[in-house]
Length: 176
Image 1 (tube, helix red, strand yellow):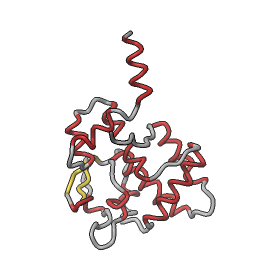
Image 2 (cartoon, helix red, strand yellow; image 1 turned 180 degrees about the horizontal axis):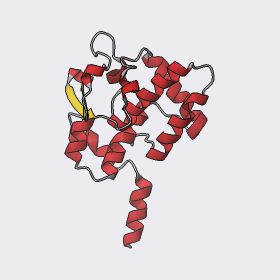
Image 3 (tube, helix red, strand yellow; image 1 turned 60 degrees about the horizontal axis):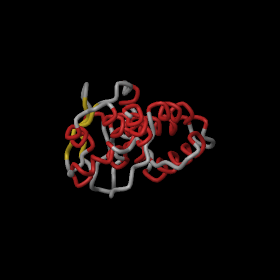
């Protein structure tokens, strides 16, 4: 059995975004970059490597990859996929691309922010899991969630059906 992913919900994500500028010793410019990366992770389901790049294999996200409603990226396994463009991705955000922050610094920022704001350990990937879980919670067909997440196997996507056991228990109790 696969381990359940760590997820955050919309309310927790909004709190993280709001509190991001309060993390000490981070410049305003860098916080803006981190907030943009967070938005792409949570509202598009993008991996950290798809945003900032990875070695010479995965190119960082650029303005040219984004159109009015979607983002075309090359991700894990060098597979192309299309993800939704967040509604909050404005012209100022687009002009920040490509981001100049490093993967490890961004990951460290998210971990610190999670401990400070949510009082638990999260990673950048937790934002992506939140995206998948949110889609599954809205009853988006699983094969569509699979496509947006870039999973090659449906059973990998299936973890998002079980990501909210409290809600499942509550619904089951309503039935009996």
